[in-house]
Image (tube, rainbow, N blue to C red):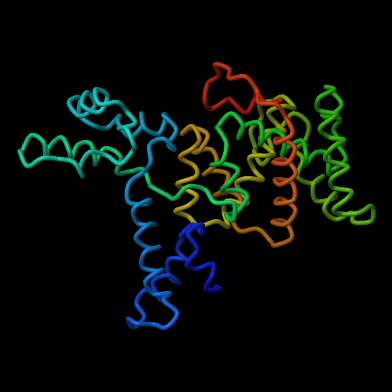
Length: 304
């Protein structure tokens, strides 16, 4: 790892970066390049961000789940203080010395013990992490749908899903133009791979369920599979932090898809990344969708 990346204030500290920083921070004092002090300060900054979750970056469904096993007294206390606790750092740092104040401080600190903290997203992070963290959940669901459309377009839309709606045809034409520019006309292997990824008509991708589903849900599921495969290669702590941005039922499903995906070959990873980056670029060109009252575990069905 290069020194300028190690001590950068912008680099997110995952397990690998932390190891490099520690090696620098514990060098003999008085190092001529001064990197030891900078590395120690960077570790302190990372610890402050990771020690407590920033509840503004946690979907409310995770907070409800964190509270459900607490006693009625603790639930009332947290709800009375506001579920986001102001700046998300808990109340322990400002507690007084009385037993009652200490008890309140412990309660406000420990009810989030199952949540993880993390530094804000950085542009240098993997695209899958940024896809979950640099936009609201509603746009994540739209992104999953667009990634599915991109994969179907790369495959040549053998099932005719993308011909159903003008908006879908427009998306598909944009993706085909982008893929042609990147892959060229003669590279057929990614297209053949994408065609094998498509489910049989009316079936859920990567699922043995017998229930028929709509093309919209099939496309969204294809996109979730792409995200899950790319997340497998990311730092596990960072993945957990990123998943907290999603409704808990969706994050749980993503975990299942990650377990089913396992390790993937570099070639497949490159194609999935190409698809995700294309979907992110397409999403940036679209107007924001109005917020709808939709069950959190079914929001991907309503992406356009």
